[in-house]
Image 1 (cartoon, rainbow, N blue to C red):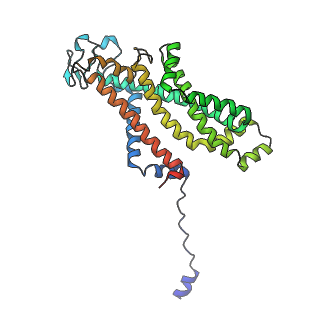
Image 2 (spheres, one colour):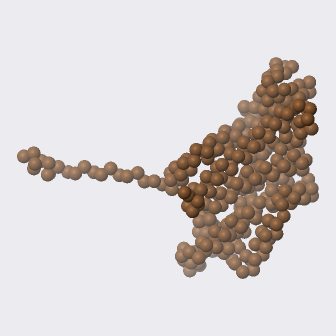
Image 3 (cartoon, rainbow, N blue to C red):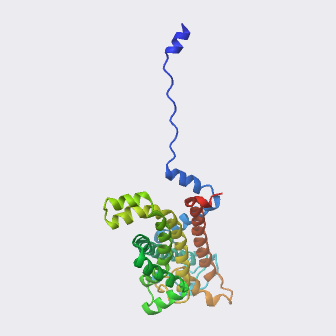
Length: 308
């Protein structure tokens, strides 16, 4: 009787296996590197500090009503005349260095990310056009790329800013001009391989518009190397902007970045007032290193050939 009952009993339904989506696979592979995860966490904290600087900074360092010239060049941990503790010291104008770094991060990240985004759009579009059109169009665009890459980036940026003058928008324009060639060369190399695929030939047979083939079919398959280059170029743009501001051709003094904060304390280094340049330099170094750590892991994840 029990045998009959067992035979007639319905079989238990199999437990469905978890479907691993591309996003989950990407996250799991990225998290394999603890160094990259640490870099991502550090950069996330830096970005949050920069975004919420007006609300979390102890002082608005560029509000003259909040400054006291008598508190100039105070050492870290010193209590000011109004009872305010300067944990990272002050500069020659009496501005709190901790607040200055928070506000400086806003400018540095905004200029770096903004210039990288615009350069990515311009360079990727020209790279797709060069690979798809070929012949004369490809020759003209790639000769411009070769010409651009033959000159040092900092030299080209200095020449452009010497002509345009100071200003955040002028710095962004200069960085876009020196960065777009990297995106164009990367996208063109990937698109040359993809344009020979069957799906591109099918799109051409259907007489789809050129812009639809380029940006809807060809561009998505060029994104992995483009994302890696964009990550690296953000760090490079931040470093270039800091260099330009340190040389006095970057952002104006009313909207200083980390590079300008470092320049403000350069003349006091030999007199022992190291903190004016030291702490902004540490913030700049940590920001660039954290972005590069993420970029290295992204390169390994998005390029299967580099996986061990």
